[in-house]
Image 1 (tube, rainbow, N blue to C red):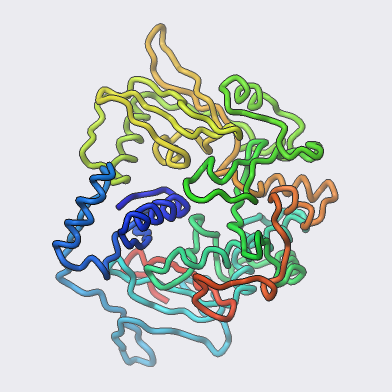
Image 2: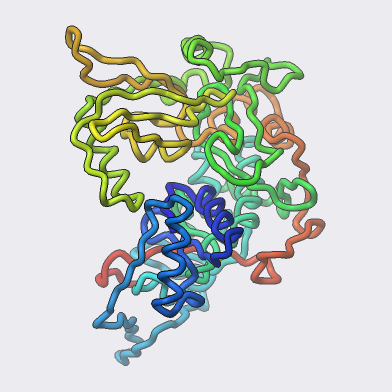
Length: 444
């Protein structure tokens, strides 16, 4: 039904189609995809009806994919010289540690079939053990202790709020930056372990539910609203805030919806929490030829196999949020205008590190040759800035104050006091992580 860079937009798309009578499921074979539910639309007639309905709503990327598998994958395990062939099996160790390609993992390992005709290796661990494999790798090894504590609360909250993401494959979270970086028990640290213990069971909530605890590397001096990057229901706790300790009571005194104010803001180099970081300010250049190549590749990944761009003539920012993020970028091509929106801009154009930028034309004489993307921040810029949390901790803020700085109207509560109904698929705090099998040669 649709292709997306992020789960957030896939979720919004899935809801859009469900409201129009099509039952959907969300998958991630490469980019995120919204599928008409395979278990419901089983007949050719039903699938054609879905196809027709989608096209009446102007969905050019909808496609009916049929695949015949002539072989069925099988997993084999050899124990004490005996080979066992299974479609699914679990492994446990009496020592509590299992190794995959040399990396140690706690809990259990389970091989199971996935929705793409292959297998997924899933690690099932208690949530506090899971955090040991996330916190040091997400926040970094030199972070001040209060920043590490804030990261522990966010990682725990994010895990509990995101368990529905991989329902199509029967696990909860992936192990990379599409969720949170998870490396099992490799390179755990005493600092991170102490921060996890100090905040044990604590999560951020809004209306007694775990929040979407989004965070990013660097914001560029101002965080983004949730809907500056993604469609769907607004998150009142993810509002744009000025990322400076001296901002005063007003969380965001800037309105960066005009090109002139964005340029003025991005020329400022002092007074922000992230001063001194490489990604706080940046300049990246692309030729028109490079822009055409990345844009064409993006269209193909997005399901558009018909558009063949011969030439990109110009780029224009056509809409911008108050946080300065580009909401809409139009590429004028030999085939006409192509508009890319919100976080899809990062996939469509190679140069920018975030959607917080302005364009500067590059010319040779009177001829336009490309564009410089001049911007700030790394990542989506929603929620806590990890680099900003370093500065706040060094200025003496504790982890509660750091979280309050970035998340509007969110409360710090314990897991036991929060409603975890709805998509909760287990009663105990158990999280499963996936490590996709990339080739048959991978072994335990």
